[in-house]
Length: 292
Length: 320
Image (cartoon, rainbow over all chains, first blue to last red; front, side, top):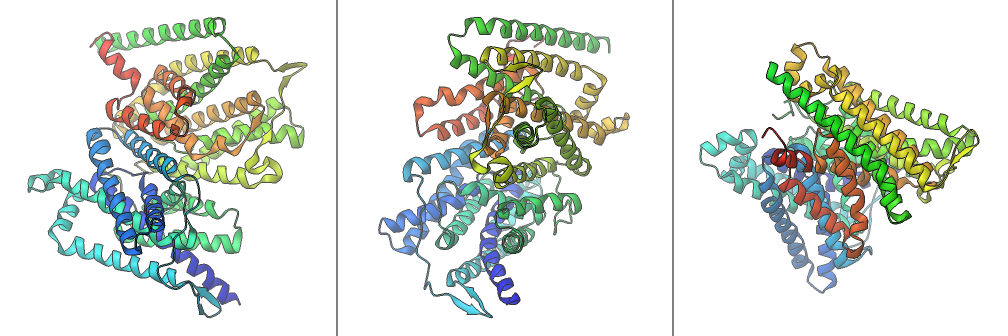
């Protein structure tokens, strides 16, 4: 009994945590390449879920709906970088934060005007029949989420280790001027990082929608929790971001189950205060995250 | 050195000239405003201006952002709502208790955070603000939950503050006092230490400025400003809901600071006036408000990253 409830909370925590992990990775990608904390990250998650639901309602086959729901947010990410972040390159941190918050309001507002305020749902990728493990139930969708997240993380690892573009991106995040000197077009890298992080967010949003449903305003909370995941893992650290996102999801589910479901949303924010007080560099951050 | 002092004097003279202009406008305003709708708008602008001036001391002079300042507004507002309603506390005492709680929380949070470098305060205050918002929403027994609660009128002795005219004068006096004291703070040794912090923390430390203590004090001060004005808003409107403490409210406050101009007291005034008027001005765009507000945030930051007042001052002001 004790084990089965614990497992139940763990399953739901890991499932949601995977979405936070992808959002946290998105934050990390953009932060590393441009030093911008992108508060519009949550809107990419919302866009992914909403667009997938919309296109599949319009009668698109699921795979096509998914591809569109990843491509469109990526284009939005590129537009954001090109027309809002790049022109304000020399602005200070606060101004950049407000630009991304403005962008998130615009994206949310457009979706609200276009698709309305209703909840949208999406069919699960395969069967709806729950699997029973030690008395706890696991939805097949959760397995999809975990598998896809793992594949994405591995693909990213390969990208940064073994491809020229990935290495150029790493170089840009370490030292922008030096990267430019050896002939890397850092503007392209910046565009790519926004496209990738928007795409990652959108995939997270699509995967979790069959379980949680979605609406135009889910982006803020999802984005903030992803951000906390990134900070918990040590802002700027990719592996840390994934672990941080999962940890935020698990603690949230445990807190909701064992402490109070009304305060579920407060748990990640308590976590961030504790981390800042006791482990200011995050769980995995060895290096200083104060970038001058 | 002499030239420097000369410039310092000019800045000081200009600032206090500005204070005079603000007071004259505040005195004339109620006589030229056509109806109570505009008077109400003016009162809300002035309340926001006081909060934003406090926040600007933190952002503009100590170089730290708070993404949870609405949380302090919420503490003040609900102290003034809950304490007199459920415990019969005198409204004036309730304002004091709210401000003390806000100061204590700000102090406890700030001490360890300011020992770190970088923008950790932004993350900590973001978390703090949301925790306060969620707590207010969930403790329905005391706060009425998401529906909010009524706030008793503000009465002192036998006198009750009720009409908009009376509120206007109270808020106008508070605002003038706030502008005057902020200008004084900025031109005091404390203010010079703050500016030194913003310039170079290490240099400030070398000449003997206790960096952590100064930052904590300015954060606590701005939290107290916000809490007191939260109380005033609650009494003025006669009603509070958890929205007063939500994340968007915090963002709006930061935007007022940045659009007006960081480290500019008069910029804060202008920023508060513009952003408070925005929803009214946008009433025609029904359904599209969020999109228009978001676009304005972005355009201002892209084209006027220094904010309105410093940009205009650099263009038209003396000593170009």
